[in-house]
Length: 539
Ligand SMILES: Nc1ncnc2c1ncn2[C@@H]1O[C@H](COP(=O)(O)OP(=O)(O)OP(=O)(O)O)[C@@H](O)[C@H]1O
Ligand SMILES: Cc1ncsc1CCO
Image (cartoon, rainbow, N blue to C red):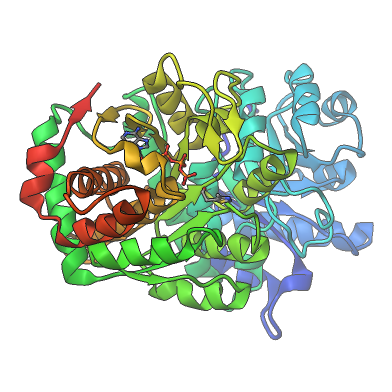
């Protein structure tokens, strides 16, 4: 019998202990198969051998009716007794080569992998291995993976890079639920090779549900739409969804787009939650109001959680490195509710504590846009070209800033905004250069932070514009709806053009008067002035 080709898209791991009261296991299983589960792993932690075989046999009978293959957790004897498609084993179970000898060439073997070392060892035995289960992605109640170090989507991506090209399929496992699925799929696209997950393993979302059919359908829809988007985008040498079809885009269209966002922001006045530093909080709230949005500077974990459905976008700026728990929850909820999430990792390269905090936050959520000065973007890109001097960048910047932002956008699957006398913005494909601004911006504190706030405002506007124009249809291949590259340009351009107008005023005598003039000019800014002054170039 030739080896079967398994579709790993929605990989159900059974767990009778998670069934809701009164729900029969076989009934739940059948409904989940009707919903679109593509492969089933029978996992029985407490059953003795006889009972395990009985459950596996009946599971296989049901799955056979839907042409869905069955794998057995750990137990080669149960697999052999029932004649299932294969086995899934852990790091401390039977060695893969021995398992292969015992179960033959045509059976499927999957292995749990927790880190890149284990992934490297897995590729050494690739002749015997069909797929790896990567996890735990997030914390989970399931006892098998409880207590494991969590990888987050980017940790999964690092493992996907290791196995790329070795013919091994991949499934992520651990804490995966419908709301965090888009974040996982998009955030785990591997940084070096753009490798993507073949599927996701779920337990409680299906097994603990009273409606497993609907639960499986919802999960399947998201995985399928991600795979469709991936196929389309692969033709453009990239697989992540922040890229949009932009053939033939010119500067004039970009400015038109910015004008459109200015109008939407004024009409819709979205609420923008900003977890930002103590230095700039008041200025950031004021620039937000000046451009027409509505600021709320909420930080408590419970409060940011409850606010998330109501906000248009969220900004996380860890300048004074406080409110970390609130930042974790706010970012996660932004992903869950598919709201734009702007990350401003202030002075991230300056201390190891900041670097660790950024890594910890990025393991919790997927940012839509990352904004920083040259030192911050350099640290995010793990480059030593530009060093930091506290919250400021030292030196003149990168030799080739366009390539830096483009590469980091691909690595992080996020829009990257690099600020300085000239700003560079990229989605990993296009690079936009903005040469507006005033030297006074270097003489007031938190100009970068305020630019980040405005980017969040226009990200909210862009999402609302998209939903208004598309009957609230959410395209599942995108974590966030709207044009986040354009939103980033709008935030930067509007801030820097207003700064030019403010700096030219007769009453501006220095940074103090400039600071309040800037708020006034943001308030008075018209699309005509933006168009007239814009120095925007597509590189
Ligand atoms: N010399 C300059 N000329 C024109 N514009 C500038 C100049 N310096 C900074 N800007 C603008 O000011 C904004 C903030 O950029 P900058 O790189 O100074 O941020 P930052 O270092 O993160 O600031 P902060 O840490 O104070 O928040 C950007 O919009 C940028 O375009
Ligand atoms: C001065 C300063 N210190 C921490 S955050 C901040 C604001 C500018 O980033």
